[in-house]
Image (cartoon, rainbow, N blue to C red; front, top):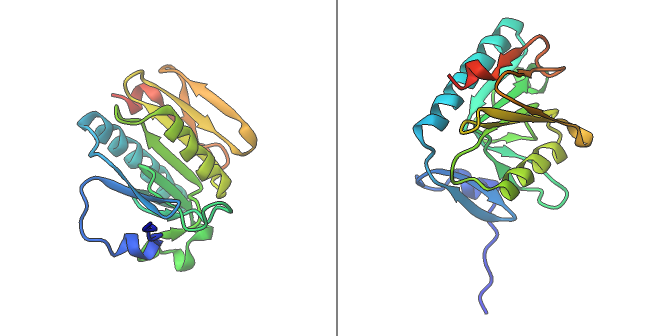
Length: 183
């Protein structure tokens, strides 16, 4: 019986071009299909607004679709790639992003739900980000124009179109009305 070779973050980083986004979970490659244009529009809008706020505060960096080695106790080489992520300046060596994957969870992870996503996988991503040290996770649902904000310890807040995403202590003063995010 043949055993599977467990892939490492370095293996993932050095792989030739693969169609779609790839993550590394339990040593196995997980690929996701290309997102649709609605998804891309929401990602672009939120990334722009977060970048604008982060730069204004000198608070850190915003990245889109970048890999994070989560170093979870049950999967120490897991690589997740949130649609958008914010990393505070205090966690950036020399104020710069690393040349490969970031080691550790982002301070804020944002996932924009695509039609191909399923609830169990999304909830696992939230648990993984928070378990690795993320301080805030936003899940955005373009189809229903709604969202959810998750904090460590199990705190969650469901958001409707008339509500706003709040940067809380991660990006103080940041307020993103969902009506603007989904327009």
